[in-house]
Length: 582
Image (cartoon, rainbow, N blue to C red):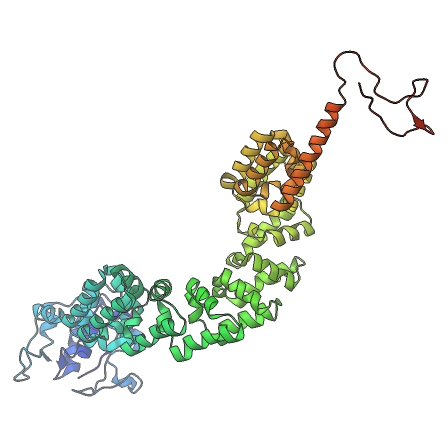
């Protein structure tokens, strides 16, 4: 065998193809290879005017390998300086007839008499070569072919018929498209090493039965992580036992986790899954039931390194930097475990420093995160834009902006256009006919937004507008405006659970609807007591007015007077009123 060393971009040439042929042991050179190949190469040089990127030992003989590092300059057929990228080489019948030293196994296997090779012969033989099958039939790109060569080079030594059988098993079991099949091979080239009968088919049946998977679910898992098929049955069984026996998941839970993050099955039980589970349980003191919830929401937690990921974030940052208690870390992870997916140094810490620059203390910022952990999903640029809008467009001072961010950090998720739409709508409701930018408008907005920052992240169509339309119909636009002025938080209450039932109770009791701003912030028992007092007071006033009206007929003197008809007084002060019987 003679090994040819060639430039990576020359695989389209026959000489490059011959290298794969040699690796596949479909051809082997037996006699005067240097003269034969040089003759063909010289003809190509004359055709193209360029040197082929071919390197070959002048002393190479049958079964004599010479590596690039071992070769001396005189061992090369062409000089390195003459190498070119992607030579356009087209071999003719004349070229191929000169390759009379190539023996064709199976054609003349009884003796090794050199047999001329024709173009049809080459096409017939190459049709069963792995290289041509992968490139031409499966449509793998040159880059992927080189990845296969580097990571699973012996695949190129397989027959195309063998690969077809393996590909057929994958296609039938999961109804794979060409693109999905290429994605699996690109991600895990060693997949083509696995036996169709002894590995691929049994593994696929194993996964289907163990997890009660549907065909589409199996496809999603294996296309997402084809390397799962490379693990032994005992290895896969051990991992499934960890999820079911150690973590307490059901079969359905395991299926849901794998559908979210298939590569969780690539983690070792001893060095990966168990240490991460024990870290959350022992170091952060999270109960098993909560760990199950956290992992089910974000299975990536079980793929994260304890030393490089979990410990720096949970202990060094949340607990030691932001002064969170372990129980608060537990609540944070239960609320939004995906916060662990973000890079600590490049994302989490820069956002933290930005909030500290707004005069938040580390502890105060931890309260913000507990209130809205999805804050970490936004870029630092987006956060700065939202803050700049509040500070410089709405004219809020630094303390007001700080209050808004503390009470409603969700505002950083909104675009400037969305914020502006809500501000315009709220201004029109709170001060009909107001002119944007006018000092009075700015004062109104400041009072409204600082008084109830959460109004900025409420939807106009789904939340604010239905409330406004209902209240304007019940109270009138002017009274609603005055109510908002008295209680800026008014529009922040639930329409169905608070505003409608409270206003109905007030109106049914005969109390003025404008008093809702007094009663709506109260808890239900306090509200009932307050409303009862208002009703009693209203009845007393009504009764008093009724008693003050004299009976029909002659107006009688109802007050005590002295002999001169004067009201009884004590040192010029009215002591009491006495009603006379008619």
